[in-house]
Image (tube, rainbow, N blue to C red; front, side, top):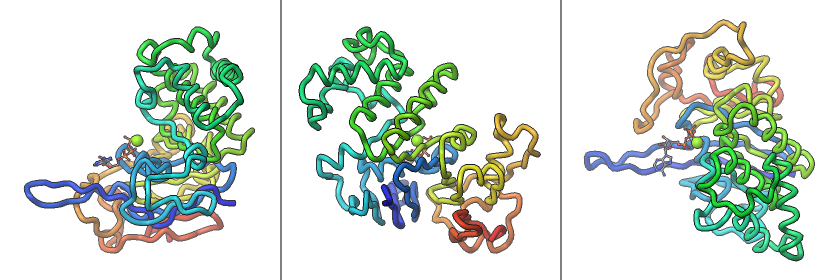
Length: 317
Ligand SMILES: Nc1ncnc2c1ncn2[C@@H]1O[C@H](COP(=O)(O)OP(=O)(O)OP(=O)(O)O)[C@@H](O)[C@H]1O
Ligand SMILES: [Mg+2]
């Protein structure tokens, strides 16, 4: 069963400038699905709409158009979800301090959602579970952290707590938005392993948002590459690394120092199309080293080039 299906999803933010109305096309006609237990990496540069897509799917943001389905049930059209569905879809925010109320100790912030969703039969059992997860996430001894307030902890510690809070609720689908970018390299691997072990044990599907292509390809089964609100390429993670097709993906890979040291760098030219302009043609054509005439005129459709490998590019398809 598909855990998440997104159909022609759009999010336009209206903006008034000098009396005229403009739209920021943060997510522009995006369609894809995520299977049970699958980890899908969302890659793309800052501002391309990754977080907005995560908010739309976890229903923190209302769409302009399009549909979102969770296990074949339509969840778009409203921000009100049934209580159980709310629990089943969890989001780990880019800034972990946003997910903790500063008036509560972190222990209380972990305990309250478990009470609300009736996970565990009494508080002692819930507390035991919280301690166990804290130790697993490297917050040891757990009793040292439970009674503290978020501002008394480091960003990395709060980020680990926000990950384990999402996991305690046993979600079917998890949106992890740059969830390790605030952690230092020494603990990043531990936290990633904690997240992956949890996801594989409980068959949780995940949308792993990152702008780090080497991390994204390590963590994910499949990768979706976005550019200015559009999906430009979808393929298995291994395939993206071995055989990137879209010029933007190829450029991203050629600049990744970890995975592709020996790959020849592709120079990037031109400018980023302003988001407020009504787009015409491919959104990448001003920067694309391979662009042709039609690229500036016709918006390329996402087409399947090989089985499971989709790309939106006139030059490639
Ligand atoms: N509430 C909002 N109102 C107006 N514009 C918004 C709003 N939220 C996001 N945007 C715009 O939508 C675009 C996409 O933003 P988003 O936060 O989704 O990008 P991102 O890919 O997550 O970037 P980053 O990697 O920096 O986190 C940006 O141009 C941003 O300025
Ligand atoms: Mg973001």
